Image (cartoon, rainbow, N blue to C red; front, side, top):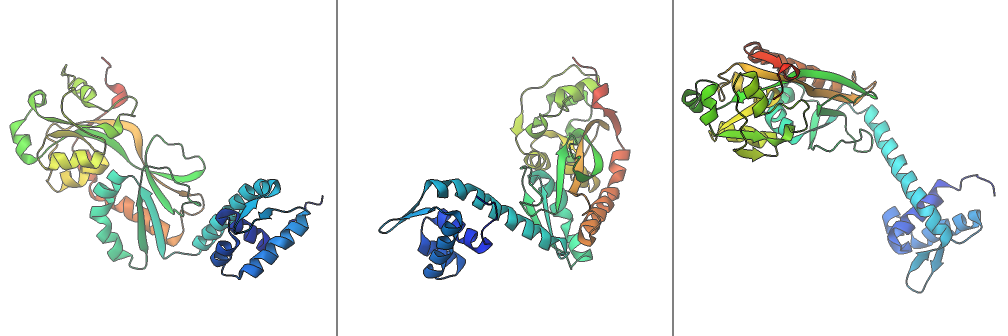
Length: 315
């Protein structure tokens, strides 16, 4: 049997009918008449030499040949649709779709977006706040901001400022707990979102770095880092704040980092996009804006004594 493919319109008609299991519904989806759709499927069956559907009284069902063809046809049209959308985005510099984790979106991007919108009114920003690793083409994503250990060999990857953690609290709590030792009596907040870090950047590690033998286990625990920071802002307790999520609050005085001792980690945020797309005008503008915004609060890091977590003795 020759491998010459049948007409694409016939395959499209088959795909729609196989998904809907109805010629009339498939015809409506493709905006053609049922007779036209039936003709396309008949021509496909003639091309194959075997029926693809059993025509019943008020329904249709796939034959063995139809069941063999249906998954590949569906995958093929999904791939074509994805490729077509990606091709259209190559020349679309007016819309920028960004994905980032919920905490980074809420605590870093959202408070700053007004400045980008003012500087670039020609760019329409769209955000997908998700921890799911998305496919740039399938999910129609232009830029991803991701935290962790780099595994970005196939992408353009720009490291953003390296991360540290340090105890942060409201100004009122900072007056109540003036020394690292006094922190042993403070209500502590646990950010569970960074439990994956290795070596750990947690309360026991920070206390060891401060020369204090204290491994706290009791306190409010949050699975989302932004919720932990919000609790600290409300005066609920003290959290080991991650640079990206607390630096603006530290810079503007809503939070205080009284002890000046921070732990750095090799995990960090990266600016990611497909290779070759980094200099497209709207992507470059967004990248340059992020770097400029990070520079605005760089003075906060300079006030800290930052110790690599790898240098902290284990128990």
